[in-house]
Each structure stands twice: as C-alpha cells, then as structure tokens.
Image (tube, rainbow over all chains, first blue to last red; front, top):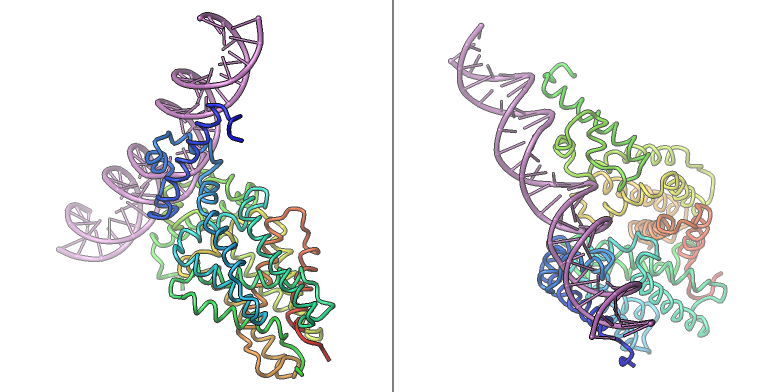
Length: 206
Length: 206
DNA sequence: TTTATTAAATAAACATGTTTAAAGATATGA
DNA sequence: TCATATCTTTAAACATGTTTATTTAATAAA
C-alpha cells in the first residue's frame, strides 16, 4: 500500500515523476544532444542538480525516459505475434516492429542504444534486461520450432537466438546510422540474412 | 616531393604529428575519458585549441590515433592467413586476430568503436573504410569458396559477408562490455554461431 | 625591402554534464 | 513541544570539449 509512504518519500517520488515527464517531452522534441539537463530541470521546475540526484546521469535519464515505449512495443509485439506463420516471418515480424518504433525518432534511439550497448550490463540494467527478454523470447520460439522438427535437434537454441539477435542488431545499426535507409530496406536485408542463417550457406540443399 | 611544401605547411604537419604522437601515448596510458585534450596539448607542447584545429574533435583524434594499429593488424592478418584451412577456420582466424588486438586495451577500443559505429559513415571515414575493407575481404573469401563448390551458387556473397560481420560485431561487443569474457570464450561463441550460419539450423542435414 | 594578405596558433570565453558543500524540510525521540 | 538527526533540494563550483576573436608568423605583392 501507499499509506506507509511518508511525506518525504511521496514528494521525492513526485519530483522524480516531474523530471521524467519533462525529460520525455524535451528529449522527443529536441533530441539528446540539443536538450540539456538545465532545460529539463527548468521545465520540471527543479534545480539541475536535482536531475542528477534522481537519475545518476543524463544517459540514465534517457534510458528511463525511453524504456517505457520499448517495453510497451515489445509486449505488444509478443502479444500480437501471428501464430500460424513460418519461423522466418515471425522473426521478421518482431524486428520490423522494433525498426518501426526506432524509426519514429532515429536520432533519439541512436543516442540511447549508442550509450547503452557498449556499457557493462550493470550500468544499463533496463536496456540489458530488455535485450535479455528479447533473446529469451527468440529462444523460446526456436525451441518450440525444434519440437515441431523444423529446427534440427542438435541446434543450441540459445546460440541460435543470440545469432539472430546479432543479425538484428547489425541491421538496426544500419538503420540508425544511414539516413537514406528505410525500415523496409533494412528489413529486406535482415530477411535475406535470417533466411540464409536458417538455411545455411554451405553444401547442397535437399 | 616534399620540396614544394613551404615552411607553413611543414610546420603545420609537424604540429599535427606531435599532437598525434602525444595522443597515442596518453590514450594508451590513461584511456579515453581520463585523458583530456589539455593533457595531450600540454604533452605535445601546443595549445588545447590547436588540437581541435588539427583534429575536428577528440573522437576524431582517437580514431586517427588508433587506426594505424588496426590497419596494421588487418593487413598482417590478411597476409598471414593460412590458405589450406577450412572456411570456418579462416573466418575465425580473422576475428580472433581482431579480438586479440582489442583485448590489449579494451576500454580504449570500446571508446573508439562506441563513438564510430553509430555515426554516419561520412563522420568516421577511417573506421568506416576499415569495416568496408574487412567485409570486402570476407566477401572475397566466400566468393572463392563458391567457385570451389563449398558455398552454394545461389548465395549472395555480399549478404553472407555482412552477416558474418554482424555476428563478429556482436561477439566483439560481448568482449568489450563484459570484463569477465576472455578472447577464447568469445571466439568459441562466435565459432558456434558462424558454424551454425554456415550449416543452417533448419531441416535435416545430409 | 616594405607592405599587405593569408594561414596557423593561441588565449580567453563558453556550454554543459557532474560534483560538492550548504541550506531547507521532514521525521524521530525526549 | 523542542532538539536532533536524516533526508531532499539546491546554489555554486568544477571539469572539460569546443568556439571565437586575437595575435603571431609566413607568404605574396608592391
């Protein structure tokens, strides 16, 4: 219950909420670089120092500001995933969903991914968690396909899921760093890659 | 010839050389964050402003400071690549070579890759070029294996090369972000992934 | 040679993420 | 209720990448 939250805790929580709200608005409007902590603090009606007290850094603030949208997108994608389509189409359904999300504000998401993907997992708990969840989900899909005999039994599902994630990640970087690339173009590239991965490229095929 | 280089150009070049030398030493010793432009300028005997005049930014300086080592590593790897081993071993020979290089100073290379991989190619010409060269080389290897009938004829070599590069890149990120990971561990993961990619994971195999 | 122009180097200022020390507000215990 | 301790907030300072306006030096023109 919230009853055991005293006035201090409540006002602290409220301050944090205000900052996060201001950050979400300003980040979306002006992007990561163009939006200063002082801007956010002013809009939230607090001091710049307060922003850093509530969020360890500007990067951490960005992470918290954006993760809600990613979490929503992920759960919606998982929920709305068609059950009766082929493996490759399911994989592409997921990745394209994320590409569409990131495409809404490429610069912002580029800043986010850039500042999380190379940090130790302990520094970017939220994003690491999301990636982990995503890989888990991929792993489940592959596992399930294995029971149907579509994936060979000796395949390590965890490795396969991570590989597919790495391919996805590469395609995502392509999207975020090349303005001329569209979601469809990147999806096509990833489709070829995933298809090749599933079929293999060596030897003749029955 | 250098004769047509007047005193101004010569001294400019010399200044740039001094800065680069100081940067290489200090970056290697203290890492990217801990080493300030002022430090480098002091060691090079120039003003901080001069550093920015000669190199557009600290990131660009880091790029120029490290690219020599990467270029050398790449050409050495290409030159020393055993000809008589299997495709997968050739691919792993290359990636492991790079892992070893980056392992010498993980934080520094992490900073480099982090600050280049998400930028438009036009902003990070050197690193983009290197990646491009690497993918080209992978592409050639695959093409050559195709003529030998080891790779199926309908396979798009460029896509295959990019896929293998994406897998490599994912493994590299793993290495750079997780201190507990060794070069061998990451190489093993990448080996499984590349092996799976080459063989494919769906259907039964002859 | 002297002057004018152009390029290189720099000192000082600026912008901004972050830290520090202090103040203000709230809870706790007598 | 009052005093003390603790937690929250903040103003001011700091560190550092970068920009700007100025100075210095070299080349070209006279």
